[in-house]
Every structure is written in C-alpha cells, then in structure tokens.
Image (cartoon, rainbow, N blue to C red; front, side, top):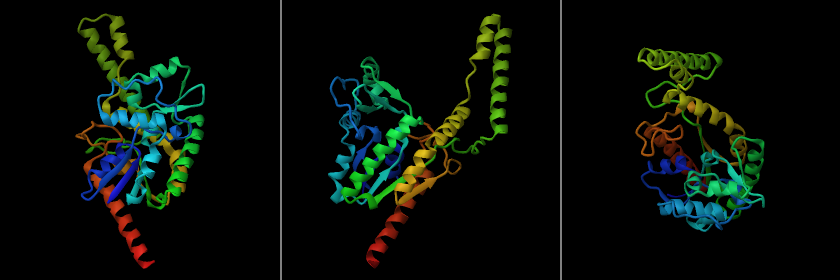
Length: 295
C-alpha cells in the first residue's frame, strides 16, 4: 500500500507499524498557511540543519510546494494521511504577507530570529488570526488533492494528545482535579523550601525555591495535552467535516509511549495505539476495495 503524508510524526510513526506500507511522499514541518503565500528561501541559511530530511522539509515549506510533491505521485498513491500536529507552533507572517511555519528546524537554523529582525511576527496557534489563515490554507490543500483525484483516498488521523504515560490513568480535568494538582504543587514547594532552610540556606534562597517549584513531568504532560486538545477543537471540526474518512482517538484512549524513539511527548504514543490506528486504516482499505468491486 503506497501512502503519502501531509502531517507530522503521528502519521509517519503510524506507518512504521504497517507491514506492507511504502511511504512514497512525506510532507512534514509544513503548516497549510505556507501554501497561501510562501516566504521563499532567500536569506535563510540551512547550514545548521545536519539532516537532509530537515533541509528538504524546511525548503519545501519555504517554497510552499508540499502538496505539489504529493500530487506528482498521485498515480501511485493508495492512501493520503493528514494530521494537524505541525500547526501547533504557529507561523511567521512577514510584512509582505508571506509566511513560513514556525518549526523547530526553522528555529534551529536561525530563520526565526532573522524573521523578527525582518519585521515578521509570530502568529500563534489557536488565535483567531491563525485559525482564519489555517482555514484558507486547508481549503487550498483540499482543492489540490481533489484536482489530483486523490481526495477520496484521504484519511484524517484525528488523534488527540495523550495526557498520561502508559501505565498511568488518564488525568481528570474538572475543577476538583485541577485544584488537586495545584495543591500538590504548593505542598511540594513548601517541602522544598523547608529543606532549603534546614540545610542552612538563607530565607531569600528558600523563598526563591518556593516560587520556582516546577510541575512534575506527569503534571506537565496532562496540562499540555488538555491545553492542546482544547485549542485544536475548532480546527478538528472543520477538518472532520471536510474529509470523508476520519480515524479518531480520544485522549483517554491513548497513552504516551515512555520508550518512544523520539522521547515521551503527548503526541508520541504507545505501540499498541499505532497498531490500533493501522488496523483502522486496513479496515477502511478493505471496505473501499469491496465497494469498488461491487461497483
């Protein structure tokens, strides 16, 4: 099965759990907002990007040609996977109206800092401005895939961010649960402050420790996932309505993979979660083939 991806590691990692899949095109680090008016490569240095993949993805974003790369392979494509995770960092909007995705690679090569110097501003994910630009870019993505005849082969992987590591219960986010997390943080801060005082540190240093106590990793994961899932809601609704086939997993149905090869993150899942998504893709493929034979 030949798969093309316009999305992130959510789609790419899923493909690694399918035995007969060949990823023939992978467009990552590419917000759909870059399709509208790409910034271009001028003034961007790529020397800090050691990976050819990173350089290729950044250049594609700057040229805004991600969908075109998929379309060129349209005659070979069995499935197109889309996910929305690469929208999470927002995009840079330049004074001339051009845009580039605020990917980690853009940050690594210094293009983000130079964007500020050039008068660009960061349009944050979740803001009304970002959402409106995203809608226009997503419509362009749809139009190009339709014209290439592969829109009916497109699947949206609508996978919420996991709020807990494998083995831990899904965190509750009601008022009582949030109060409990804040209370535990205050208790840890007070304990650390007492330890600082009893170990001979001054009152000022102990007070600083009280103020700077960090959340635990599990608390951070839970808060990040809850915030991101809330911010994605209106994007997901638009995408769900547009795409004929949607594979959905709620946050309480997935978990963070503690041994994930890219490290634990709310969008890096357990092996069994990827296997479950792959099985849903196979089910869609089988159903589609049966419908085609009946026709």
